Image (cartoon, rainbow, N blue to C red; front, side, top):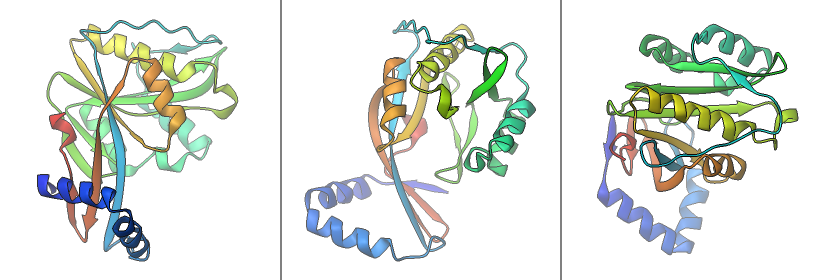
Length: 218
């Protein structure tokens, strides 16, 4: 269950302005066990597919097969590189049921990364919730490029090619979220035409989840 609250968002604004209170509360919450209290916050980004055209060329050859997505190949590669937080059980279950795209990217025949995006119902691991997105919206929930292939424009290229595919399929909006400290990802998505539209705060107190906004309404 997700509860959104304008009052909660107002309280957070006050905490941000009162730095002493913010420091005090952060030290308290760091000592509370995760099963009692959890929190995080992310930038949510948006790209309108029917308004923006972007062309990106990576510095190395990159291929991604959108025509015959084999989700198991992506699972296998994620396991191979021991990327454990990229393979949550519930996330996999929902992705398979809803027909989401989990695709590997290759360069000269070698897998160098993956991209995951879906529509309709999506399990968002950072909220531990299934969100229902509108019919015209795609949720891009992860992209990963192996370290030795980074800084070559690969991530932005994969994101942009995904946007092209989704536009062809009739979608007009793509949403994603990124931790505020993840500057490389923010840059990659910015290069691919995404813009930050909101910061959403998440809190879980025992089994009750609070969000300062519902991402599906953005």
